Image (cartoon, rainbow, N blue to C red; front, side, top):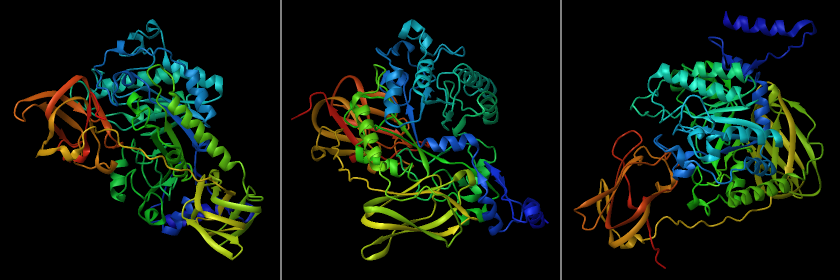
Length: 606
């Protein structure tokens, strides 16, 4: 019966002309019970983005601005007990932020209006834990307003990050009360600052001041956004934009925007995704094999978020650790070039300005991308091509073309339909295959071996219905040398150490030394279930009598961003032995190896 209904729909859509008109499913479709794989593939071809989703994808480059109380405490995650008096930028210049980002090619700015510490960058009526209680502008300042106005002046889109997790709010954990509190904050941001183009929620859900966890009312949050900012996309825990699954700037080479992953804010997400055995990190979110098992499909495109520095907030110790040009270009090709939008974080410093180290690197990246994509060697590559699997088209190249990048784009307003493709180049020796892949989507950039060619041949080996190729291009990207980064988070050679204990990790440094900090650096920058999260750090002169320096520390966001975290002491700490005792993100005993520990001397040795 279901299959008969599906056939009748297609007949009705054919109309008087007898030519079937393609159905359209905006943002979501549910497969009829008992639908075959062929029927599911046919329907999947007709899933399209909403208008806000399409406009979002076309931006390609968006910027995060992590700025707040953490900027002044030198932390990544605050605990909500911070004194608002610490927030006092000496020369905040939102115009400089937006000018810098626009010149680098970014199309939107997303500001951390409130992070997990609960400190609000606008004078909210909901709490005193905000800029209104700070000395900045005598408590009359509003960072959200300044950034929003700067975006307006420079023609940039504007978005807000509002952390659902609030470690300062007393009502957090009293779910109905906190949900009302959060909606009031959300309402202020979406009512008082003009058009908001993206609302960014992460899924953090730790304990509040009372030790309780919160049950978020995502449906109510979504309704608030739809009522107040209907053209805004909702990201990560929203149902418009999907987190790629890591904070390293790495997208999937095979990236489906038409995905079987149910958005995390939906009540059925846990059951649906568990049944399919998938999460945000799964390598396959939309192949035919996944469609065969799925009951519904979502237009849920990928956003790749990463920071230009090791941390998300500004730390002076990271001024020399800004990602290299090669690293950033690799990120670009593996995000924008993998059918995703790149959300790059550039954290303003304590002055309230983007540091010269960051702005210089952004200028270098913009110049490199401009040079690379200024000269498209394909002749007539923007002529639309509608083709089914098995079809091919030859594109002439300009005389004397040397290329190492091939661009493919689909008209995603009509769906994502390419299942697989092959790229061939005509050289002096004849046709040779230089690249192949599965998905295309909005934009696919293939880095291929340097080659001199007179033509390209694109063959679509499998499609869903007929694919709509909107552009084919070819370019030459100059090689970028990698800058070697020296690990500068350990001042004492480990060959002088002696490991006294492993659980907790106890190390004899060989002699009494004066320390200013220690560093925890997860091995190979990989997250492990038994990695350290909450910790205690102590020192000793003899390995018997211990002085606890940090009793309740936290390596914030270490699971998502497993890079070295340096913890500075409030004063000079002396000792011969150090002890690092930690629990994992799940609360079990963490396993720390000596190679993951570093110490910083007050007076580094030459």
